[in-house]
Image 1: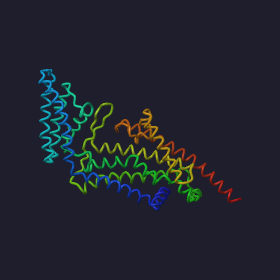
Image 2: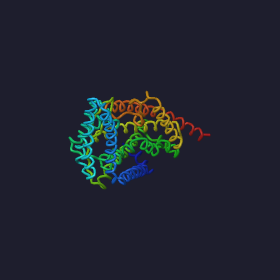
Image 3: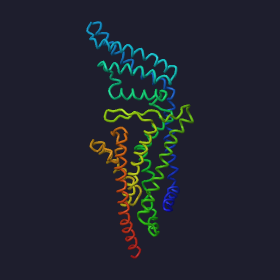
Image 4: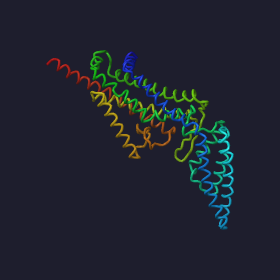
Length: 382
């Protein structure tokens, strides 16, 4: 515990915590300001969605009515035309509610439209804007909103606490967050070599595994601050500057193997935090392992960045590597949705890789230090 406090004090003196909090604050403020600056266009964006549906409906209706004029309309197409006309009518109260900014009523009005669309599809109709798994996802999400008495929200530029914290963590708990942690903490070992304090530590009655675990523990402490601050600011800014309330039951559709599962947004956030945490642990253990072989901070940071960059590119290029058993799976743009099975597999596999890297760090650390100490003593004697 004393060694862990010593490592944390070093990070504090190096002002790592200040820079970490500053970066999170600036990025959160910038993202929230971007969304808030276009908040007044929420009504316009909602209308644009109905405009797309209306345009598609009018195109289908025109084609069916043309067939009717040619007396070439089949019985099933006659039913399609009747449903399409009803769908067109269901958009009118929906658009009126948007114009009146009556967001609470929109899920119920949208439900009427989706039921008609589902009926239209069951009569062999095609509606390219919303079909297949996307239609099923929209229906289940809408049912969840009605069941939990939730209002329609703008998910493109969200300013509500529950949606903004989701967007904020999506930004920070990815490549950006990984890069920030790597830039700030990647030299935790090499800086001791540059300042020659590593030999002073060697003279203390501290075992090699204690040094490694204390450094890893200090990195975990910083990670906890990073995650907690990102979550806190993501919720706090909307609560301070908008009238929205925190709705942790807001639905998040997960699509896996052509099946839709709706979970509350807080569960989705927990999934994201878990996977980002294990991904960060992997990076931290890689930092400690690589640092045993390099002497300066710049070379260490560049080496780790190159290794991770190449590994990520290879992961993106070969579909077989897009597996939860790959530690870089979380950061891949091609990975699937977060689902419980992949989270468990990713956590276990990445945890095992992290343990092995930490073990190798302990083994090679002693050899590295002995070699460096022996060379230093030989120079002193000569």
